[in-house]
Length: 295
Image (cartoon, rainbow, N blue to C red; front, side):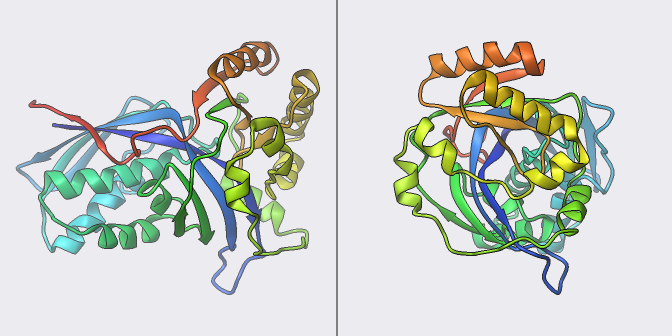
């Protein structure tokens, strides 16, 4: 059996353009992994088919799950009919803008490639990842990258100077599709000009936070005004900027040191109900197998 760790991500910076002819939105995003993870246990089976189980009943385990789709894509590339058993231990909240499903898919690609001895090169895995979802290629790079196109063009950069993030979890999720539909109801200025990333990576938390933007915050807050109210309350109580990750609903802020992050989490937990301090852009890369054993 192979065990793989599947890390979450946050979008430190996210600019979104109007939909193109294919219906996809062009993106410009600085994405970083965070120290919140799911775990995949994978093993090859004698019979064909991919059997997926999960410790959360609200996570689908059929062919709609990206883990199963990743396995089917690897099998297609191998022209094979192998089988596998996969158990997913879920800790990344679905619908929170943390990329849990995409991270699971990236880890699964690595896992299937190894347990089936498929020997697909990384370039081929990246092609499959881009077909599975816009965020999946990032998780084959990590831990700090600039993502453009639909998100499939990934350029690794230095980790940010702040090494800690505080995540705030509202008690509801936001469907990505609905957020983008709300976004499309209003024309917004769009520029693909990239910020001075090298300069940004060297900034401390208090200097970096005011520069960060997320174009999906406004439509997300229109859909769930209580999320916007929570963000405003957190900013006032904490005296620091708070951003939303991806299409929400998770909010975050940054800290330079662990002690400061834990203080913020403790203080904010009294308001948001669920806040946690996590490492920002931790090592190792999320797709690296964390251990192997028999069973």
